[in-house]
Image (cartoon, rainbow, N blue to C red; front, side, top):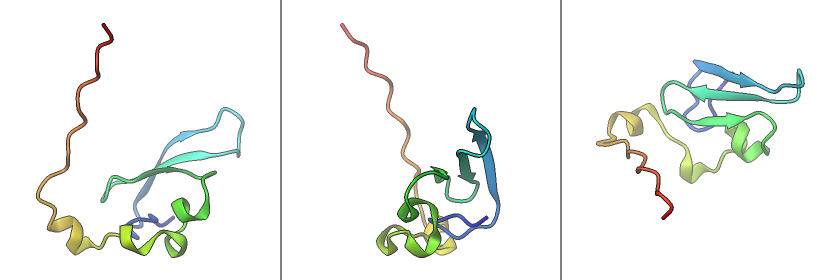
Length: 76
């Protein structure tokens, strides 16, 4: 298995569909990309992933900050 975004080979299966064989959720430990195997090729295959969003190990090493997820908004 190859990460579509950074081409890393250490991809982890995070979840599988309740119906066996329908889809899996995969996670790349290097660039943190997550995807479901049932998504289109532009999200699941390296050769179809948009070139402007691909990452190299050098891009990842030069990253200064991973943005945090903002707190949930509370409905009033």
